[in-house]
Image (cartoon, rainbow, N blue to C red; front, side, top):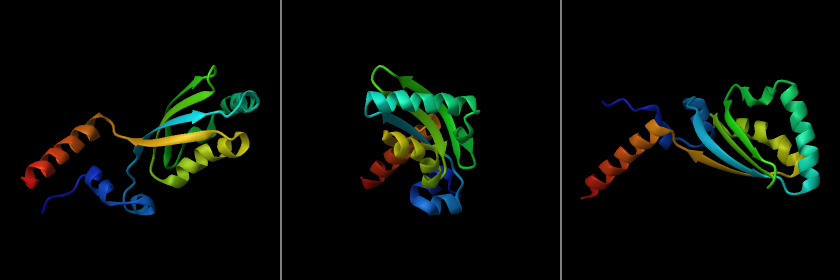
Amino acid sequence: FKQKTAYEIRLSLVGSEMCIRDRFMAYYHVHGLIPDGISQSEGYKMFEQYIASGAPMDNFDGFELVSRFHAPETGEVFVTFKADNHLAISQHFGVWRAKFGLDWNITAVLNDDEVIQRNKQVADAVAAMG
């Protein structure tokens, strides 16, 4: 019997199963685009208030913000975070979409250890195919 790693378990789980059976925090990279200048101006006013209040939704059970960068000249926002379920992601990003129409492109990404493990698994699978 070979014990599976969290990464191997995560690959076999989807959606809420992952949250219930394995509290693994997956990494994500987000590219956000503010649709127009008015939304950007109003959004940044609200964002400044959010930061002044201690940014309470940046870290909570199931969600951890890693970094956030802004490109105000183009209306873009870049975020890296960890989350263990889709509801936590929606809880963090949903208000900005609902209030200001931000489009979020959310991509699951791997950290260094995970990509090395993934590459070994792919190589082993290819070798097993002959």
